Length: 316
Image 1 (tube, rainbow, N blue to C red):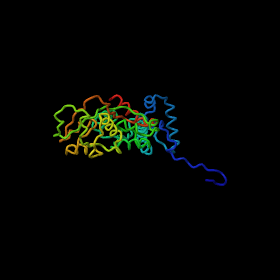
Image 2 (image 1 turned 120 degrees about the vertical axis):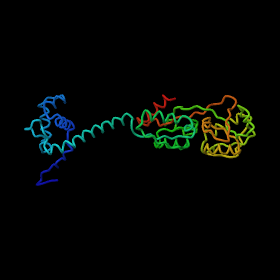
Image 3 (image 1 turned 180 degrees about the horizontal axis):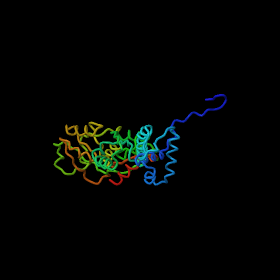
Image 4 (image 1 turned 30 degrees about the vertical axis):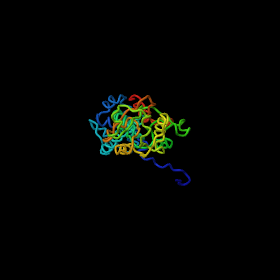
């Protein structure tokens, strides 16, 4: 705005120059009703306190204290201002505390991708421990297939994914440079049988002995890593599994086995489901274990994520 060729600086509203320190002086002086006692409590010289309160009154344009009264009294304007000054100091303290906690990863949110295997095994312990240490962090869980989790990690729409690490072997080469992983659970495959199957009388069964069985397995297009692992074990035993039915969800696989459609090979955590109509048996021989891992982006700067990984490392 220009008047008669001279620039005019707009008057700044009071809150743009309010000094938190001067507000603290005001509140302390109002509580003590004495410059000397207030100065002692604040650890400053009395003349300095008097000067600072005077500067605040000059900025505000009105008097805060009736200085002729003993003990010191607030003016009506001073009483009104004091109420708001106390709130400002409380809010300032809360703002600093909130920002500090956020900087330490004590608040915020973490986006987790999970699969059935981690949900049936280590997840309850992970959640319980994390919430004990960082109760104010919001955990957002999404049950997703491994390839969906990898895609969301690529897009920075997921902080941590939990899935079988063999899924990473089939991902794009650039994913290996982008992602870090930590083994959380190691588990073998188990044989899942209908409860009246002839093999239920045995405690362990060889894979070769399953050559003539009908199989119910996860589809390769959804769980390629797991399905490929099963196929490779069967091929090493001299046969290709005869798959009569595929099912994406473990619960559906168990239902089909219970109904006598076939047998299945699944990660050992499935035993925690205690599904009626099925029996679990160990496989003979030594086979590579399946590794369930936590996977995250190397370039994720989240302090909440780092806290989560530290807790996870200590837990396993």
